[in-house]
Image 1 (cartoon, rainbow, N blue to C red):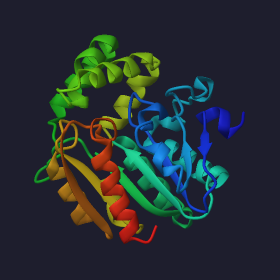
Image 2: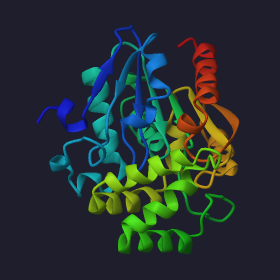
Image 3: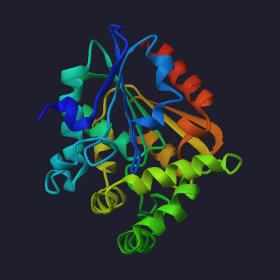
Length: 267
């Protein structure tokens, strides 16, 4: 089984530097359609689906390998080696921001920078750390997801998307969630929402942009501020937007923030 088929890889452009776009939970590479084309004019762009998502090869989904986010990080390293050219900039949304961080820590020679959109190293409040959820909230979320995945998707997706003035985006995310294999989605959700990678943050040496929305149900501002303090070389940019998916609801502001970061870092 080729890596290309496993992750349904799409490569566009032939520039000396590469940008890899990695989607979040319940999504696929189509979620980058409002941003990626512009970067293909300046970079080699690599789009792909995480194994278990989109049009990836579901037959390669290994419950043991993907029992932690490190399994996905190993895939990202393989993809960067196979399809990357020159400096590789990794753009990860939500949980994939953590996946990109883990890949970078494991193979720092491959990556020139990280762009984290709506990231969170830990979703559960812990002492002075504000993750946004109490453990009982996460347990309840996972129980609902496991007992009624389609119902959970139709309720949660619009809330996660935000952008109340554009309800079609919430419908799109709902449909994306519903296309995901329920058993894989349940497994990935548990791995995502119970993960805690706060201790890994100081190990990421690459220049990093933390891009957050002013109102985000999943990743509150306190999370971005915490990450900014813990990451050795980070820039925190907050855009005025409601929701967890600014690459869809505010693509212009998101691209502006990314472009500014890349220009400042000479990338």
